[in-house]
Image (tube, rainbow, N blue to C red):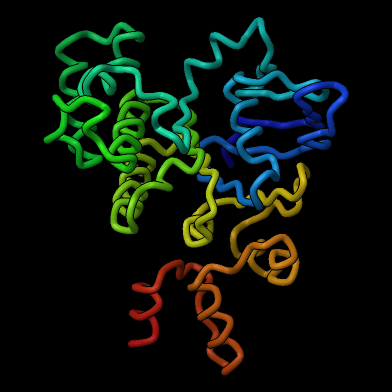
Amino acid sequence: MNKPIIEFKNINFSYDQEDELILKNVCFSINEGQYVCLIGHNGSGKSTIAKLLCGLLNYQDGEILINGIKLNDENLEALRKDIGIVFQNPDNQFIGSTVEDDIAFGLENRCIEREKMISLVHDFSKRVGMENFLSKQPEELSGGQKQRVAIAGILALDLKIIIFDEATSMLDPQGVEEIRKLVFDMRKKDPKLTFISITHDMEEAYLADKVICLKDGEVFLNDTPENVFKHEEELKSIGLGLPFIVKIKNDLLKHGIKIDENIKNIEDLAGFLCK
């Protein structure tokens, strides 16, 4: 079994010591190479966890370990080199004057040799469907196109940990599926790549290795997707539903048809039922 690459131990956080806690005694671990989805209603603490992990916020109590090393001011710069995050609003991290400049920005900061950098920029712009927009300026792009550029810039960096904070929220369903496939392909090539997705998409969560569900700043559920989505009533109580595929599986089970738990999408289900 892979070792934990991220550990949150009894983390408490508030924006001011006099304010109510945003995170309350949060504990979980994520193993190297896992695809983990953080779910929960708005304000449950998902994005706060991402910002703590990147060192954008400082926690008050507890301990965060990355690869067994405590995340603190002394180690922050070194640990940040392994972590990248794509935010929901791409305007918050669009830095370059053109698409090409923006994708290249992180590579330049890492002193990547120019020929390799150009190759990576063209490779990842193509992977996210932005190869024909390299000379475009930010104001010429839609929100979804900016998200694609931000994703390309992070994926090109060859990081150990990648966080998507609702990073595909402006994409249409086809775009979401394209990015999801890209991430899965990258994980196949690099089994040690750890991916954390903060999402409201229950279909995506069902494809993850682990789902961590937050409620009012606390870990509510922390298990495999199959086990988390068995808690239908508890999820409903915090405004979350079941993935469509799970609803179908449950309906079939009521009629005496048991479906393999490894079936995670409609296409595989259709193939199973047609056998």
